[in-house]
Image (tube, rainbow, N blue to C red; front, side, top):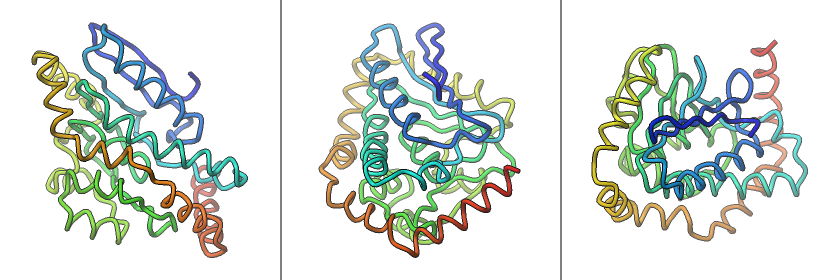
Length: 255
C-alpha cells in the first residue's frame, strides 16, 4: 500500500491516510482504502477501525490536479470506484471512528461521515461538502449519507451552498461528535473505540446493520445514470474552466 498505512494493536486497526502533505484522494488511494476496509471487516482478529490523517489535514478531498488530467476511461473508472468507497465504509460492520486531524472538505468529509463517531481537531480546520460550487454533481446517495447526520433540511441547504464549517460549528450541527486539541485527537478516538469494543460484537454488528440498512442500500444501489450525468458535467466547458482556476489556486498554495 502506497497511499495509506495500516497498524493493528490489541485488535484495534488504524488506517492513516498517507499521501503527500494534504492526503488528496486519487484513484489509487480509493482502491487501497476499499480493499483494506473490506479485508479488515472480515478479519476476526480486528475488533474496530480508526481512520485518521496527518497534522493539519485529514484529507483535502479529491486530487483535482491529478483527476483533471484523467482521460474519459480513467475518470469513469475513478468515479465508479469513488462511489464504491462510502458504500464500503458505511457497510463496515465493526466500530469505525474517524480521527479528523485537520482539514476535511469534500472527499475527506465523505470518508469521515461514514464513521460511527467523529473526533475533530479544534483550530482553523474546515469540514463539509463543497462539490456543487466546484461543478461536481452530488449523487443522492451522498445527500442521504449527509442527511443521516445533519437531517434532510440542513443537509440540503449545506450541500446547495457548498458550506464548509469549523470544528465548533460542526459539533453543534452534529457533523462531528467531539472536538479536542490536535494533540489529543487520536487518544480521544481510541478511548471511544475501546468503549465500543467492550460491547458484544454480535450485538453491535447486527444492530448496526439494522440501523443502517436503508442507508447502505442507497449507497449500494445502481447509480449508473447519476454517474453518466456526473461525467457529462465533468467535461462541460464551464466545469473545466472552474477546475482550471481551482487547480491554479492549489498550485499557488503549494508553491
